Length: 222
Image 1 (cartoon, rainbow, N blue to C red):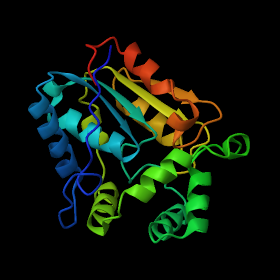
Image 2 (image 1 turned 90 degrees about the horizontal axis):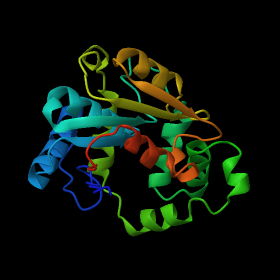
Image 3 (image 1 turned 60 degrees about the vertical axis):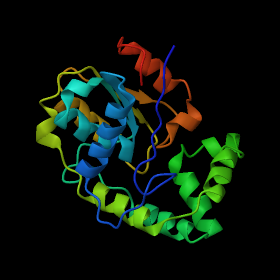
């Protein structure tokens, strides 16, 4: 019963990759353009990691477009959040150059420490998609710039839409302390910490986001 829109951010997929830097407000305005073009009305926005940062900015800037938010594995801003380990950024960059060892290390950081031992083929489809999509450095650098400039702590107190916050208890990239911070900032927000999952928890607990979105009791649109 859900209609799902999955836009590509600028710099990835089939979207254009203009020169960096990108700002988080640029990415939010891109998403506004998608929603207005689709003419779907107030919408439940689901954002994971960088996507969660983008939809925070959209909800603050254009609250009339938002029926509810699901904020997954994300943070309110860089000034207060626990930072990811430097090794993550190193492995991310090296993997973009085709370094397989770095890619394997990156995948280990994306999920709970025990997950790959139980499900060694978890990233098979991910690897196929990554191999089929050419890297565009303008997009990669631009999105890193947007994430580095993210900071919206004070503005989040203005939100009045229903908000569900999800995080994996083993998230090594954006530690769950950030989700606790989000829940403290946003009036009425509900926080769920998912056991035995990491940053990419939809791979490990694929029903978590659909069930949480339904719990918002909003019109059936995403």
